[in-house]
Length: 141
Image 1 (cartoon, rainbow, N blue to C red):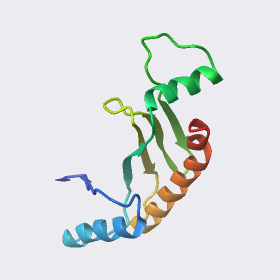
Image 2: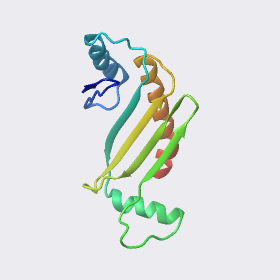
Image 3: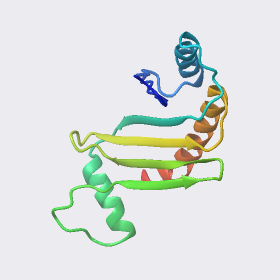
Image 4: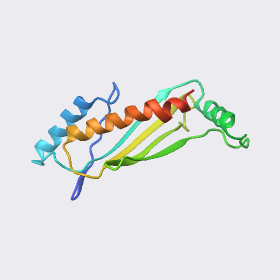
């Protein structure tokens, strides 16, 4: 979708987040529109993973670490705000409401300065890897 100040680009990747594949696809769009690839970018990356029962697992994890929850609460999600001075946004992990056998993930990342799509994708990949090794790994224990 093309708007005066924004291009919305959606891509479904079967094999997960792949910098080269996204860069190639998005660069083709920019080239077709004669737009320089040095811009500001905001990424909204969503995904799911399989598990046995995300609703119960998330609630049990929370109750072991903190306090018992009311019976009406059937699952717990997390939202982490990130800001390293160059990139800011949020990372969410939560039980998928419509399917207990899945977790839902979302990374929304915005870079405050202009850069190329390749540089931005590299920064996004680094931030995702850091969160996977950090808060994501703690939640799934």
